[in-house]
Image (cartoon, rainbow, N blue to C red; front, side):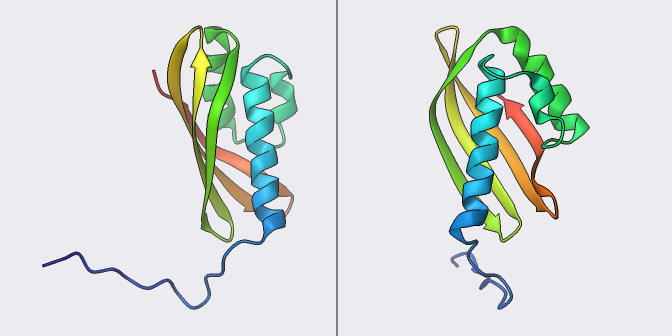
Length: 114
């Protein structure tokens, strides 16, 4: 028996371009911080403490370069991004979750896989 697919709730709408663009801008800033082009303090208002601590731990790996980033709206107020980055010649996966708040997009989860 195939898995049952639940329809989306009637209240769910596709996020508009401005919302997705805001999440894309957040992802770009995070990559710039990881690559050393921006200071970590630039993310203070755009990340939770947990996400910022994880980013800080990954600053020691050296500059990185994003090779591909995909942004997927999960709901009107949540986007998830996956991507690949090159870190000292190694290809690594980057994952993050961003949530829309009244003040803008905030990264709530971040992970850079080995």
